[in-house]
Length: 116
Length: 407
Image (cartoon, rainbow over all chains, first blue to last red):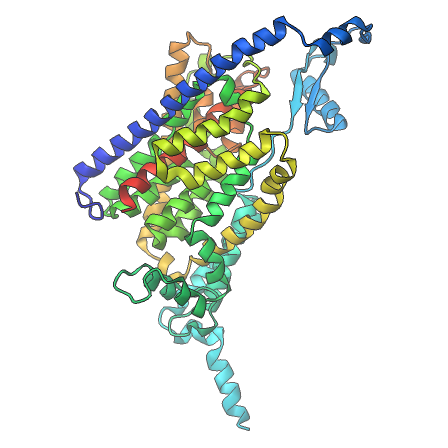
């Protein structure tokens, strides 16, 4: 097959084959990732079922009382607490709902790529 | 001392005289104007400014300093690289010949030609990328695959328009919406088209917020657009650490030609996730990325010498690039629609368009369009899965094309 001056039928075949290869590669990868997830999941369940000794110790100590009306702990990843407060206020304002009716689980900065 | 003769010599050697006196010197003027337009787009309109400013200035420098027959002061010498690629030339693949006669931008370009910069950029991208959304919903890999449709349709279209196989493959990869991958593949297969392909790829990526929404609206109903997706499962640290090792092993064994891109992408991600190489992760995503971006952008811009750029092929590439982007978006949305149907309406098809790579811009567009129809909808994290899957998908597409046409 002349790949430089490729004929139209050959180009059509190459295009179809290429698309199939991309699909095949990512389907296989999906299966591998799913298997990985399945293998890790029981481990997590087991960890949850049997808490570590350190956790048992911690549990015996009186837990710090949460503030009244709190929705739990907010996790911040690469985010300044002041920025997080601002983001929560903006979200509440945009949605038109008071902050105490919303629950934020985590706030994470998505870094800007410089190439794409 | 012959003062008049010296002044005359200086005048004749100046670039101003070269615009008029050299063969095709006027074309350099046109390219300088194009460089000004690109600078305007990068600075005033903020179209991918980190790349476009460097590309535009590289284009400006090479067209200010290179005129046919007056190459001794040039910063970039296209004839050196032509000899480098010509199998009949005594300087075929001779870096020594390049080094002996190179201008500054020729030295920079060696990093592009050897595939070093795109791979290092991929390392930075890997260090910046959180694959958690993909791990929590592995099916989003299918959307990353579906959105590579434009790559192969544009490849076929380019063959129909008379491009050679390797050139068509390089044009097609614009549809992957991934700048470093496009540069990597084009440098290997059709370096003579690097300038227009890089410009098309980065320009369209900057225009994603304008290109994608009309297609998204056309392909989906309002009922589909308002679908709220359930929160994805939490991903453990161990899963995130194993993932880059797993992907590198699996994908490189499957398609060895993807090794430089996938290898560096996953190495960067391992730096990020393993928890013991924070300094390396920080360097890869900041200092290294910025340094490489400088060299990559200016040297890619330098390839836009008038003699290579000002021809009808450039217009064809710009048009094919737009078609590739639009069809890739459509492919991703078709994948999204299939998932919407098969999941009983639980998956919002708008996340499919994020499969075109272009991290994180395409995911933001899914989020913005979704929120336009349902103010309480947050699709961003759901769209990040297909988005990062698109990076892997476009690298696999490039690897396939390199295997077929790379000789």
